[in-house]
Length: 610
Ligand code: M6R
Image (cartoon, rainbow, N blue to C red; front, side, top):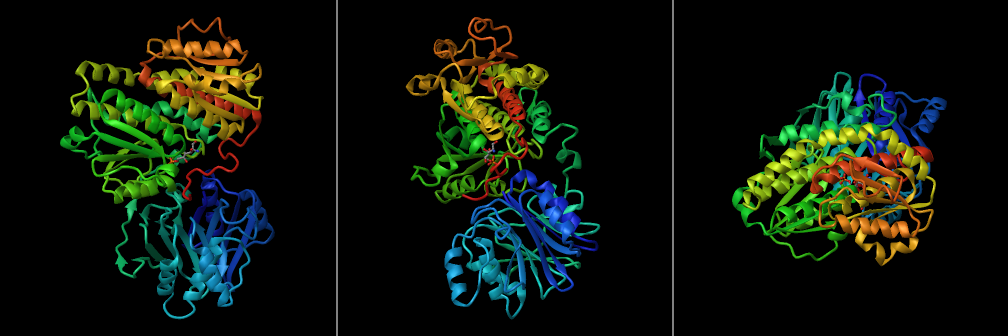
């Protein structure tokens, strides 16, 4: 999704803006630009494509000033082109704006402004907002006009803004899209997230929805949209630079796949003490948990597959009825929800538009909100009454890996906690599960050690147009996630399916060219034999079977030579191990296909628009 950086300081802002935009590249973009407050007013440089392209533009037409804004754009309104790139100006260059989000009533505003004589040079909603701000700030106090314009805009925005008549001021505002203000020895900054300006800042303010900031060299003034002052809430930055570099790995994604042992180990240290699961931010009192009879889990993408796993676990250990839905569907349903339903959400970023809209809808119906989230201070965290942080650290690779296994782990903790409080889990069963869970980081480590074998299999099967992923029960969401990983980074069409559903359609696809990835690690479970029958059905139709199997399981030897062995664990925990093999399988397929693994085409890291 789009990224914003801005700076007002005591040295040339341009290198800081470009560096900040590079640090936001992971969010996904298709064009970029900067604007600085030059001696003769605002100067803008933009280009379509990667930041190297913008750097070429800046090299051939340099600009330099201590005040500027920069942007990476992920096209929503209008194609990816230079004229649609940000910054956009309004009032014939009186203001320049960068914007994340969508202005929903831009068409109405545009037609009103046209009647007043405004002319537009792009197809974007951002230019409309810039022109609106310009029209409201022709006279009077600039900040009053800015707030008036923002009150008229419907939708979501994070903006950075320069005004020609205020050559020493940077403006910022947010509603529904994240934006922070940061300060450091050489200036004050704005950015979409902390990593973008991490080397420059010591403290940050997480702007809240409806806040407008005026930033000068003297300090930061914040108001709400009605003009009431808000005291700046500076918070010390705790993130370390090592959390956002690739640490010698060829990609962030590979680094993050490898980090999973440490992330899961860290979660165990943090939330498990002996045989006690303690979730300090959950704040669900025991009576509420005992009376809980319905839960709805809503999320998007990979986080939705974590939700599916969560449902299976909670249903397995408790008598709570659990449903799941995708944020984009749930928000347009007419669901039966009330204050007896716990609405749980899962999100790496905490900024996913459809997840947030579902939360707001449920809140209005009186539901308490539980969020499983990776980002402190995110919009979702602010909406939630009950929290489990996943502590995976910044995830830079667009394709989610460590955040996903951390979400799965959070669901294990939640399910155990709910079951224990409700008296639905025996001490022995809980102890068994926790002991098995403690071994998972080591099991993941073993999967990582087998990466050469996984690479060999990926290279053998990467070239076809399509692949099919099959799993059952706890590993059905993992089949979906494995297929999603493959699609996202290798661009090979891949479909995840419940193995038992295969006969109802996808079996028609099977021939000697189709790789079929079968998750067969569950050997004692009631679906174990059924999974093997499904594999045999694929074999009978000459499908190219790649099996994920538990070490020591010999059942598959006569069926396929392409078996990826993973350490055996309890069935309900096997997804935590199996998914790592699938992440690596997708990774090496993508590498063989020569794609841009950390920044797959068309994808945004967090989808902050509908
Ligand atoms: O930040 P969130 O977890 O809410 O994001 C949800 C999805 O957009 C995200 O999981 C997406 O599917 C990833 N690209 C998966 O790799």
